[in-house]
Amino acid sequence: MPVLCPMANHPQPPKKITLTAPPPPNILSVSQTRPDTVELTWQQHRSYFDITGYVISRCRIYTIDTVTTTIGAMETSLSITGLTPGVTYIFTVRAMSKTLRSGPSKPIQVTLEENVEVQSSQWWAWHQVCLVGVVIFCMVCVVRRRGSIARECSNCHRRCIIS
Image (cartoon, rainbow, N blue to C red; front, side, top):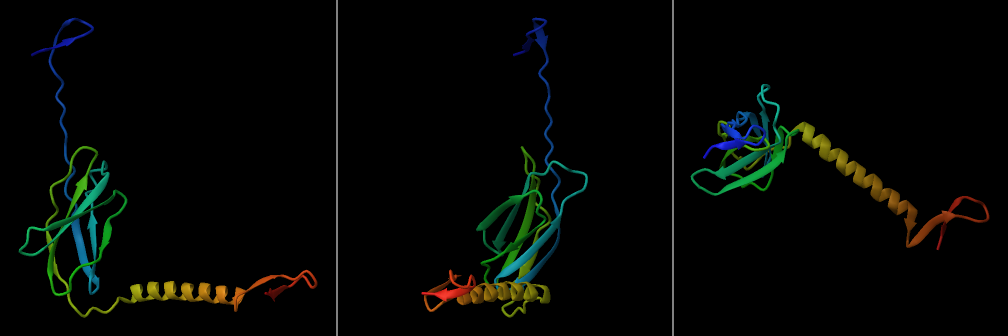
């Protein structure tokens, strides 16, 4: 049925709308960072700027059980935890625009090793987290000694332990 143009009161052909899905991302690397964790990194095509997010899929090899994770457009890597050492996983990434998803990236396969040493940069990050935790704990201990609270003394105006 033709669409009538409301202004001229005559038939007007319907407008064709062409939707183009974004191209699939290129997976650059997948690296195991802990026995149950991998870091997946990808790159989006530079020619497509309307990306709203990414869908990362993983499945164990020879199964159909797929787990998906959706993240924002500014992210181009994802740390995936809770994996089983000794198992082979297949990962793909899809780009999303407002209306469409790309096809899957080229699948990448990784078998998780059971004995993985933490990389030096990760060791340093964990070291910093532990150090900050110890400093905060020590500060709390200094302020709260044996159930007492450090307050400003009304006599000498110094911080004294007052029960």
